[in-house]
Length: 299
Image 1: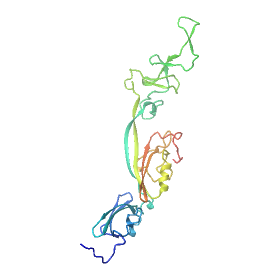
Image 2 (image 1 turned 180 degrees about the vertical axis):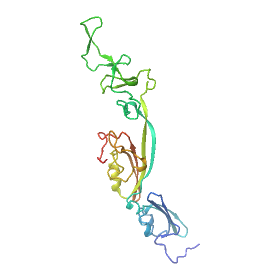
Image 3 (image 1 turned 90 degrees about the horizontal axis):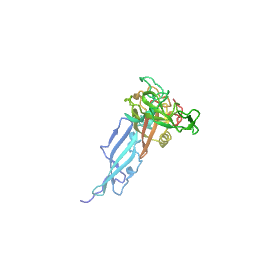
Image 4 (image 1 turned 60 degrees about the horizontal axis):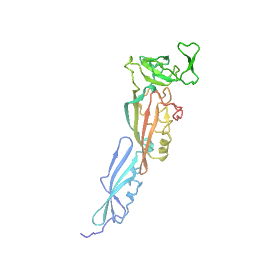
């Protein structure tokens, strides 16, 4: 069949009826559109970052495309557009889409908040701070190399010793010495089967993961700059969007050791003229020590 040219020469791609918009409910708008053009014509809609040619949606830009080469020298362009609804956060970023996972993970028993000193809502301390030297536990090295004891049955005769009894605390706990800083040996007394041989416990852990689409690369940089930083609020001092949900119902944003939130992961994907930031936040009821983790001072 011969091609007959009449009317529009399709030198410029023409948007076809039936284009579709999709809103994800968080502010992200995507559009699927079809264009027709002459194979020797203008493929401008396929240029990444090109604006959608309808004024109401010109904040959406070309992200990806495909072309089918039709008969009679025609080309069909399938173009996907993406953008942020200007009525959501002024079009600067979408509302964060979040998932909260609550699990228990194994932690060393010595890290338990009730290990040395009794805390509220527990029936008793785990190990305590009052330790008594006892032959029940293993012998431990004496730190002072000049330690001597009087030989049994030979008054006035002293012999060098390099071992001594370890010390027992609560629930069969055993330490190198009676000082609070003595190294924990373990739970060694079989009279306390609840603790005997235990080295760990299950600690509740909350992880908040999610993603947000942002318009400006500066906001991407803000996320990156806060990686590994703790926070005493939901926005890291108004630097980031509100990425901690209200429904988490945290009683206090400050724990015993510091802020309860830590930005533990940031990944970035490029979608044309916007960016998808995937992040993860770790929540600790005791808080992240502000002597270990950077803290911006916002509480």
